[in-house]
Image (cartoon, rainbow, N blue to C red):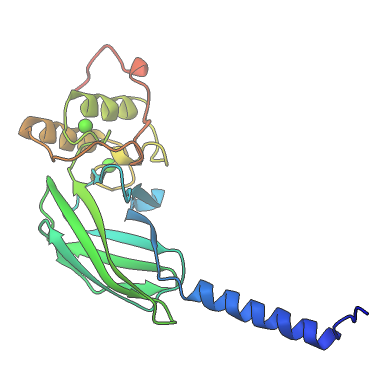
Length: 226
Ligand SMILES: [Ca+2]
Ligand SMILES: [Ca+2]
């Protein structure tokens, strides 16, 4: 004859299963899920350049003379991590950890270079550790369309935005190269300087670095005011 188990036994079995499931979840080492370079554009606010984790490295095209701030997000809260540069020239500040993210300030960056930030010993509260992960990225002042070079296309993009008296927004902030919260002739001058310098940074182009839409070139004036 079938006997139904008492409710207390069912509850106990459920709790054991839940504890086992929770332990399995907590036992998963942290995983890096996203990275950005964040700058504050004066009164226009803060805007992020996405730094893809694979498929080509992102390009920070704004002026890094005052440094840059990386924000790396993980899939769960972390308690510690050890950052270091394995390629490129910059000085790293101390990592600031807040729940799922690490904020890291870089200073002393030279323009037009490829860098690799390595994070090791990334731990969660349970002591599970991500041994190592690399974040490759590049800096190239004036490379608005993230091609790895500064050329006439970048100049045309910022000129078009300035002619339209555009305000700094999510789809054009890369043009605010001097990060003052405005799109002006000063930004045009910086992009033109990059074009004159030539060269670029090697690396595969990426399709998911916040490419600027700025304004379509068909809006570009036929009269060049510069
Ligand atoms: Ca470009
Ligand atoms: Ca500007």
